[in-house]
Image 1 (spheres, rainbow, N blue to C red):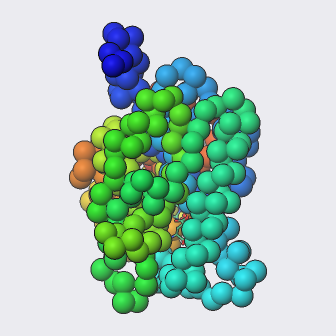
Image 2 (cartoon, rainbow, N blue to C red):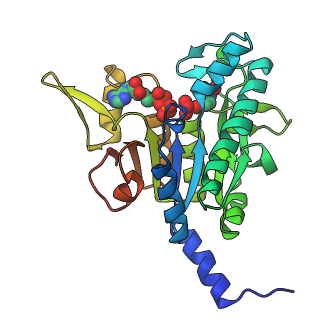
Image 3 (cartoon, rainbow, N blue to C red):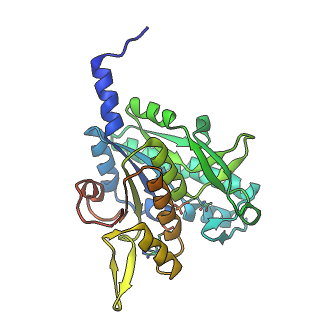
Length: 275
Ligand SMILES: Nc1ncnc2c1ncn2[C@@H]1O[C@H](COP(=O)(O)OP(=O)(O)O)[C@@H](O)[C@H]1O
Ligand SMILES: CC(=O)N[C@@H](CCC(=O)OP(=O)(O)O)C(=O)O
């Protein structure tokens, strides 16, 4: 039987202690420059393991359009029946997941794509308003051990946000929600939400600017008064939920900012930090 050497133990420990979850939105993915993927590759090479959870909302909408399948968003969630689910799974777990993995591996990173349904990675149940939105899920459990196993093999996990319940029913999960759950179950300190805006914006005295730091009570106020709307709502809700689950900090930032990941990790005032 193979015994665990000191070197194995210390490399397992370094993987365990130096890691973060990054969510990348569908609005950003296609536009991200090679240098962004290069940052991920470099972090991995230095022993800091990113765990990626990705979206792909715009690509799903465009495929649904091509196929002539109607879909709508209700409160930021895509109304999902079985026909829409097929397209969601095809686009997220097939097209987008594989594109990211190919791009990472193409520049020398080692990454493996997983759907949330692989190995029962993401367990889900219907959201509270399932009668309205259909097969949309909330996460009930994430198999952190599976992600740890992939990381122990030195592969960067790239996860598509689809879940399964105990009966084998698939669910479409908002990617921000899935990323928050993955971060909480993995016990990471930081969730980075990479999107197409420089952070949470607030208008004060007629000037719109990024909030460098925002508290959860300020967020509730901004949702109530409409300053946070649309796609920003699931981000901040996921942020607040994963912070309740032990994640220390969530940073929302623009993927187009040069060297954004390393700058966030260095504590630079970039994007919005939710504390
Ligand atoms: N207060 C806010 N500050 C910044 N962006 C906001 C705010 N409220 C709503 N938004 C919207 O949220 C969008 C980001 O969400 P979304 O388009 O779903 O991104 P992603 O595809 O990265 O998940 C922004 O493009 C912006 O239109
Ligand atoms: C339930 C629900 O709305 N799921 C999303 C999943 C993809 C996603 O969240 O992608 P972004 O991060 O690009 O928005 C959808 O069907 O669009």
